[in-house]
Length: 152
Image (cartoon, rainbow, N blue to C red; front, top):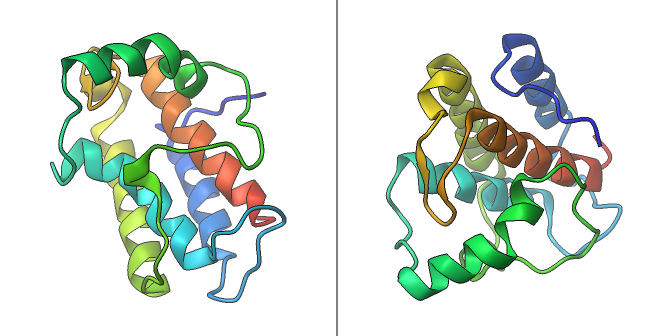
């Protein structure tokens, strides 16, 4: 899998263009989420970075996440279709498509403007200290997976 640099202005714009291709009625190629739920799901990653909305995992859970999940999230292999997700990422109710889309776009612009150096050595909610490359992989790979899920 090619991991593009989400911190690059051009790549951020490309991802935002893909998001803008979505409509409230865009159907997934696989999976159960609607477009509004997928956008809300993608926002969770950024909520953990910027909003302190989700409780941090305790020491044992964080250790287990670092041991068994981190390499899948920040590694170069693509996510498998229909793979399980953490409970805080499960979005089962309808969301406001326009609001979720705007939030995701704003988070992308904020992350890009802060730049990769801002994230280098920053602690992740679940995985401890990450390099800028790991942050980039986590951000880009997740978005690319779900945008591809919806054919954009």
